[in-house]
Length: 195
Image (cartoon, rainbow, N blue to C red; front, side, top):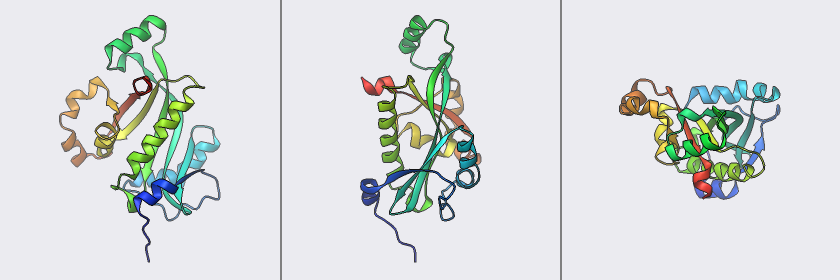
């Protein structure tokens, strides 16, 4: 018998647990085979090499989802906001790359998808990253999003695509249909949220 928890209950009671060797992952499945496979086969190996940190999102010992974080950078030329770009160029004239935290993977269990849980957890994650940015210098949160997750990140969670992808994104619905795991680089300027 499959037991479903209410989304409100999950959002009020979920906890984060760092992935460890004894984490029980067998019952986790999300809509993407690639994201499911990453958690089960690659996440711990990469974490052991200090390439990322994976946090399991659990509620009553059930894995609701997970995310992996790592450091990265974004090229200054890819920033859409000309005013921000010019201010950064003025303050850091030699920098071509800017520090960022990357959400390497983010997935919610198939069982609990499309209930608003992912957006709320992502908002909480962004809030926590903003707090961390007060102690560690970075300005951007970035993600390589699958085409099928484009609306989730851009429309629901205020990420921005690179200008170079504007033309391609005119056909986003077709891309989602034909190549749902095509990847778009998206970013969020946390200074816009802090102010």
